[in-house]
Length: 431
Ligand code: G3P
Ligand code: MG
Image (tube, rainbow, N blue to C red):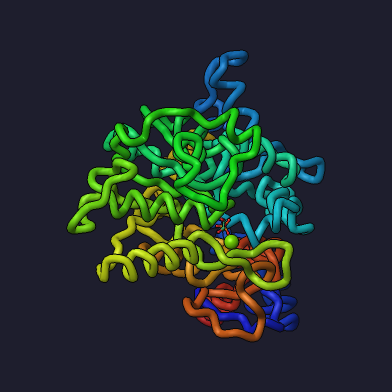
């Protein structure tokens, strides 16, 4: 099957076959029912074996396990007469600019997920996960809200935020500064991940408001922030979990620590190389919101901090980045998908193809193209990418929106394709 970069005006459905070819191919299929069509090869399990497998992966009825898993098992829709089969491929979705914008669902998004849950003409269910660079809430909170917006249950077991893989850092560091997000939310995330000692910029400002002379904590921030003597505390790492709500104060405190001796506020290193390491949950320079033009994101904050550090020290700042398009997140996404497919769908083998739907060429398309040939990048026009521009990283296909992306995938996997038509015609000629 050839991978085509669609011109923005061509719909996914029209790409594979012209209408004439489709009609011819469809009549060919009706006429040749003896041999299984190539489309069938995309299914890795027969309905019967799927039924068997499905019952074998569920725990005893009524058990906690059964309840947990079964709520994420997509149910057949009334349209479906038979038990749907499960696609051997999978999808992974970016969120902002693909399914949501500024907290509002993109109108076609729920329908796109419904299709993957079985509401499609091929009677197939397709496993999928979400890989967002966003964050600032626990995976459970985020999934609860997201499920409502998407009108379908979404499990934390199919969901990665920018900071999700950073939970592993709890094993490496004791006291950490967690930056970004609203109020105390990121502290709660870090504590839920198991970090032993989490401090926030608010705690530092409560200790000494002169750290940032133009920033006054609100009454609520003051109440929630935890007082301690930071002249005696060694901060071992700086973790930027989510977008900063106050670049000025957050940058000042991050710089103070980077330039410090062993992460102690009020100290200054002579070499500027004794401060704690800096980690970012992602490095999106811009992202899609409800404003027409993309807004600066965490990657832009990194540029700013690095420039300040360089101006101050004449040295390059080293930052460890998670999120798309970085490998750590790719590895995490693959593992998550493998577990999700096995637990919920009973699939132990690797997916034949992972379709990744994103809106940001620098993050999503690079991520999908970079590490594994079985990933297939799909760029939508509802986010950062602007129609008429040349994406910095070339997707396999560009479509209007996430619904078109799902239709494209289903068509690519199950539709009657030109190759099939040619193959059958050749076979006929041999007869
Ligand atoms: O802060 C979130 C943003 O930069 C991008 O989120 O879902 O497009 O990866 P997403
Ligand atoms: Mg996005």
